[in-house]
Image 1 (cartoon, rainbow, N blue to C red):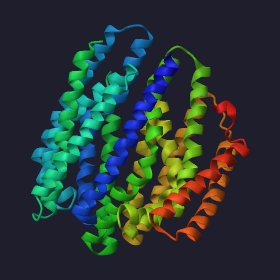
Image 2 (image 1 turned 30 degrees about the vertical axis):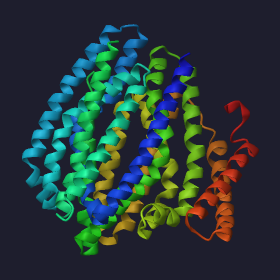
Image 3 (image 1 turned 45 degrees about the vertical axis):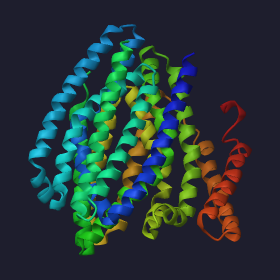
Image 4 (image 1 turned 60 degrees about the horizontal axis):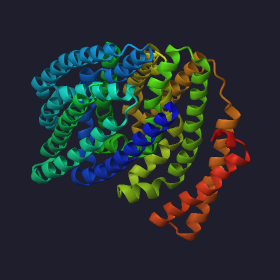
Length: 479
């Protein structure tokens, strides 16, 4: 029964995540068309402050609530779950209001001296209103995931996205002709309204349901370092390019356009990783080491084998994907440059979730902070001299560092051995062979465009997955 519930919740979260990612990509295409690459760069700057403020508002509370509530349920202490939730919400609201006040009253200073662009000030003030709602939503989502109920979280995210798109489209339309300052503020208005509606929806579901203290300091520091990086990047790029608009355009093309496309297929992995937190936490509380090792091995297999296939698709089809989605050839170059990183990006994400389920938050925090601490001086030193190629190299080093350390820690913690040749070397060779064959045949038939992408993906899949069976990277026992 527990396995059936897990699969059901995984299907719900996966379907929701895929739908949200698809809607998000389409919405970004629409937004990029209205704001342009420079506007997307400005939005990414404001969003970096939003991420930092959101960290103060929620401070990793969703995962903490999931773990603590799952532990209480595993030990049969049901009354403690509501006490955990009340305390988490109380602490989150205090942090959220403090963060909102700081950003609201300091918006002009932050925009001018931190972001280097006074046009960001109205958007910064607007984002403040979403922070308390965001924090409470994180608590409630963590509670429902611990209860093995993925439906409320999925429904709230769908509602949030619908509201966001509707409000942003209306607000951007109303602000047409008033410049990037007004357009960027309109986008953040949609985010704020969407967060508040989703929070109220979750609260209503919780009242019908009736059925820990987060590690805030680590989240604050980590988010602060990430925000510092996002602020430094346009400034360092401006020194290299000699033009702020060009720097913002390239920054927006990477962070706001290329990376969302690359991370779009990770919906399944994100859903499985989220659902494994309470499962692994409960198994650890009951001392079921064999069950934990089996979950770790399955997660590595589900992460690595599809990621090599997707990396090959993005690498060979980068230009066509960028032209089809964004009508921007520059984004295609960034897609191709970052495509080989996909396996490491996905692995880092799922290992982070598993480690948190095993009470390894301190390690994940140290790993992330060490990564950001290394990235900042490298950005300051090399990006002003070499521009975007230097930043792409830094991203490679960063993702290799965090993913390999996280995977090593997880395998050592669970005393699990990874079949590297079977799940890394063989799939890599299969992906390269399938992609080269698919690309050659598809270009010979179609030349380019949407039909090329469809034919290329179909041929690559038709070659790659049978090769995995042929080389025994996947067997019938895996199903």
